[in-house]
Each structure stands twice: as C-alpha cells, then as structure tokens.
Length: 111
Length: 114
Image (cartoon, rainbow over all chains, first blue to last red):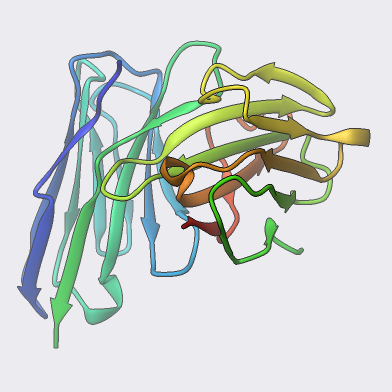
C-alpha cells in the first residue's frame, strides 16, 4: 500500500500566520497533486508537481516536491480565513492514472 | 463549462436495499474515475473508465458494487445489496485524454446505510 501520510492532521492558526503542511511516503511518485476540499464539495486541484526538487508558487501558497519524489510540502504565507479547508496531497505512479490520496490536513484560519 | 456533476447529493437507505449513484463527467473527458471516502479514512480509488471500457477496477471492494458507463458518457455505480460499511462519500472525477493525474472532482454523493 502506497500510503501518503500528511502532517499535521489538524491545524488551527490566527489570520496572518504562516504554516507548512507535509506529505510523506516511502514510495516514489511520478507526480504529486495538492487539492483543497471544502465541506459538501469535491477536492479542487491546486497544483501538480512532477520533477524532484520542483517548487511552484500560487499566490501565497508555495508547493515543493522532494528531491527523491517521495515527499512534498505546502507552505502558506500570511494565512487568510479563506484558506480554511481540508488540504489533500495525492500521488500518481507510472502509467497508472489512479491516484493515491493522503490522509488530509484540516486547516482552520481564525480571523 | 459545466463541471462534474453527481446525483443524488445524499442518499439514506436501509441495509439490504439497492442504490444507484450517477456521475456526469465534464463534456469530452474520456477518463472517468470513482473514489470513496469512508468515515475517518482517506479517499480511495474504486475504478477507472476510459470511454465505456473499464481500465482498472482494482479498487472495487466486492461484487456488490457494479459500475457502468454505457456510451462513454455518464456513469452509474450500483450497490446491491447495501451493507452498513458501504456508508461514506462517493466521488466521481474526470480528466481528458493525456490529462495525466490532474482530475476534476464532482461534489460527491453522501451515502448512509442504516
């Protein structure tokens, strides 16, 4: 089983603070996606990283793929209440299009 | 462009009954996936269609689950007979040919088996 462990599981912070969410596995992935999910909705794709060491930025969000393509991180700068949600990493391997989802990080940003 | 839609949004049935979930993918997306999250667990893959063909159904829990995609458009997932452990949220996702792992998810169907 290619388990993707996310940490922390829960995070409650004040508006304006910075945070980092981690996604770790013992398996190598061809690519890794980050999704955000809000209650009653499906996951919404934020970013895909495919190259070891790759860094992508999306406004205040910075995503990094580990050099060995086994782990990834999501850093949010100056968190806003609108960032509240469930953050999911998901990895794909080889030619298979099914993805393995991480355990999820529930973020709450308090105004 | 309309996103992935799923019907119904919620379903409450009794153990032993049958339920059919429907997914309409984004128009033109050949790839269609079903996933499930049971309470407290991560989202898990069930199966993958390419057009009307089942590409990978390795995640289907047992033979009480039947997925179809007639004509390569919408898909249905039937659970018959439903058991308590089938409760959870069922997600459908779609992607175009060559879309890689970037999948577009529907809002999910919350199934409760009592």
